[in-house]
Each structure stands twice: as C-alpha cells, then as structure tokens.
Amino acid sequence: MEKNTTEDFSLSENTKGRTNKGFSETGLRKMREVLAQHVDSGKIPGLVALVSRNGETHVEALGTMRHDGGAPMRRNTIFRLASTTKPITVSAVMVLLDECKLRLDDPVDQWLPELANRQVLKRPDGPLDETVPARRPITVRDLMTSTFGLGVDHSLLGSPIMNAFFESGVFDTPGQEMPDPDEFMRRLGKLPLIYQPGERWQYHISLEVLGVLVARVTGQTFEEFLRERILDPLGMKDTGFYVPESKIDRLPPAYIPDPQTGEFNVWDEAAGGRYSKPPAFQAGGGGLLTTVDDYHAYLQMLLNHGMYGNKRILSQPAVQLMTTNRLTPEQLASREELARNNVHLSFGQGQHGGWGFGMAVRTYRGDYASIGQFGWDGGSGTAAYADPEKQLIGILFTQVGMSTPDSAHVIQDFWTTVYQAIED
Image (cartoon, rainbow, N blue to C red; front, top):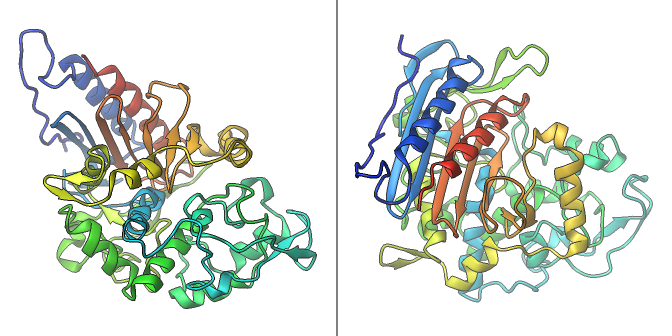
C-alpha cells in the first residue's frame, strides 16, 4: 500500500524557483519530505497540512486514517480539534461585544449566577473549606483572558482543589460524558476559586464557561449562534460539535499512544463514538471538529482584520483585541511558568510569551516564527496559527494525541520547514 498520498500540491513555476507568492519550491518540497518522514516512522499514521500566503495555498495529505492502514488521509478529512477550538470560541463573544450586548468589564453574575459571590482559597494548595470572599465579581474580561480564578493548573496537580475539579466532571476527558450546560455551571459553582478574579492566568475552563455565556445572552445554543454568526458566513460547512452520519467516514479514529510503549490506543472511534451524535455540552474549550480548509477560512478572516470577501464578520478592534497580548506581567508569570517549567510535559509547546483572547500570541522571537503570530494547539494533535507579519497561515492536523512527544514533534518540524519555505 502507498503510505503517502498527496492532494493539491501544485507549484507555480517561475524562473527563480519560487512560487508566485513567496514560497520556495525547495522549501515546500522539504516540508513535504519532513512530514513524510514522520508518517513513514509509523508514529504518525496520517496528517493533513495546509500552508497559505497571499492567496496561494498548498495542502499535503499524507498517510492513512487508521494506524493499521485503510483509507488514505484526504484534504477533506475531519479532525477533532481539542483545544484548537479555543480561538474559534472567542469570536462568538466578540460578536456580542461588537453589538454592545456584552461589555468587557461587566460582571457575569447576571447571566452566570452560579459564579456570583465566590469564595477563594486562602492557599492554592490548601483545604477546600479554608476560603475568603472574592474581592470583586468575575467579569467578561476575566473569562476572555482565562484569569477568572479557576482552571487547569499543572503546578497544583494532586492538590485538594485540582482533585475536586477533576472529580466534579467539568473537565472534558476521554471516556467521560460532559453534563449539560446548566448542570456544568451548577457543579462549577460548588468549587471555590483558586485565585482572586483577574489575579492569575489558568488554562481551559474559562473557554467552556464562555460557550455557556454566549448561549444565555443570546437565548440560542452556543452552536446555533456560532453557526449563524461565524461558521456559516465563513462557509465552514464541515465544522461543528459532532459529525453527521453522512460524513462519519471522513473522521479518523483518535489515538492516545501508550506513553511507555507507543502502542496506539483508540480513545474515540468514528462510527458510534462520542462525536457521532450531538453532545449534551457544546464545549467551547475543546469540542469542535473541522477540516484544514474550514479552519483556514477562519484564520484568513482574522488576518483580513475581520473581513471575509466583502462580508464583515468582526470589527477591526475586536480582531486586534483577540490576537494581541492581553495579560499583565503578573498574569503572564503563571502562563510562563506553565510553558517553561512544564516543558517536559508539553513537549515544547506553549512557549509564546503572550495570550490574547482564547489563543497564544508570540511576543518574543523564541523559534522560527515571527513576533505577532497567533493561534493555538490541541492535545489531539492539532495546530493552527496565523502570522500577520508574513501574511502566513499554517495548519497541521493529526489523529494522534499528545500523550507522547510524537505529534508535538511533527508540529514543531512543520513550523520549522514552513518558515524556511518563505522567500521574499
């Protein structure tokens, strides 16, 4: 069987060995060869990669849907985004800010009464009943910047609050059904905050809450509003919180390799799996599925300052707020701690220096990428970023979770070769 399949890999010839828009033929070939090496190693069954710049797009589809062969990866393969959902979720909130249905410094108590009158732990690693009252209400801004006081905190693993957090069922984990939005908020409301509102960046859970906030402000489900205002106007027809039966053959199984042996363990099958039916909870932190072309349309809209074709999706200031650093130095300290002190757990991901609304923002030159690059990665083996300086979009989707370094390494090698392929 042919392991590598390529779709839509066409090079525009000119006399200098470059494509017309600033990729070099040699660079694109190198990118393909490096990606193919990861697939040929047997550690990444398949992947789909997209790079685009100034209106020119190249797509690579390599390998197979399953680790033991079968159907090839294709350009329209649908992937579970995991946390690469987050940059899309915030756009729905930005619509509400644009329309003055929300304000950044409004307390959220009116819509999320479960988060009113919070208690805060005296010590982050202390007993759950040793608390003080929150100094102020939680605001929309706190949720948008992931600083509302509660989230996944790797520095507190094993502490009473993290144990209670994981036991409550509010964290989306393989093999566990999420509760419906009202029950989700009820359970969340029983937990004390770890830090005072606005004090410290913490990961993930704020994006889940934002999906509920959108639903309660609009009177629609989160997916209905997201589809009406973002997905449909961008033509993102293959994006949603589940895959209908007519498309399920385009969804590969999701693997979590054994950290010791590398053996492929399936955590979600396509047919009959968790994404084959509408979920009780439309998870803004990690529940979307999409294709490289759909995600490309979304990032292109952000690069175009909120415009898509002749349609305005978001205002220019909204896009600027989302895609530039929104954290204070004090808030950034915890973000940096997660990225640098847990580098052995994140396999090198997450070192960007900044955080906007629901996405990373690169504030220093730490690798091949430009300052100003924005986007995020997903634990299911996904990455999607845009670079305003280079007018570059890069997307790499695999079906291999980050329980081993393999999918993180292919993502890092993808970016190394993408930036080398730029010729101006």
